[in-house]
Image (cartoon, rainbow, N blue to C red):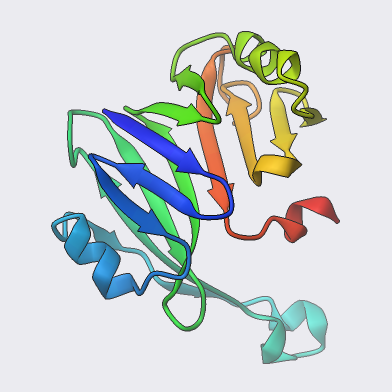
Amino acid sequence: MNLEYLPNHGFIINSTKIVWNSKRDSVRKLLDNKHQADDRVINVAEFFDGDKNKNIYQKRDIYKDIYSKNDSLFLSYDQNNLLTELEVHNGFNILVDGISMEFGNEILNVVKQFRDREIECTEIENGNYLLSNLKMTIANGVSLGGDGTFLKYFYGAKDISHLME
């Protein structure tokens, strides 16, 4: 299955364009409601003198096996249920700025393609690359705590300022 990531806009999946700030219910309908909701509050108030404003509110939908066996993607939303992030873990060929990335391909070959086009790729930790101008990261299996130097993870977002700190 192909997925085209559109930096600063969103992505196209199965010929359906989904843009940042789309309402959660609308995205679910576009993807035929083949999701599992995964909303939770991560309580970190105890580390901030009981300040509950520091808690992390995670709102996301998990999509597995929606187009083919073993495909997996996560869509995250802000407090107002507007789309802000895309994570792809498996099963998609991802096209970004004319560069095709397939899970299982050597990540350094992918990085080289971006660098050959003079797109900055910064290794923020072993096997995890930030492409700040495209508001995305890619990572290999080692970076995720597993094995292999092959592409295993893709992340794109409306805003990546949290990665720049």
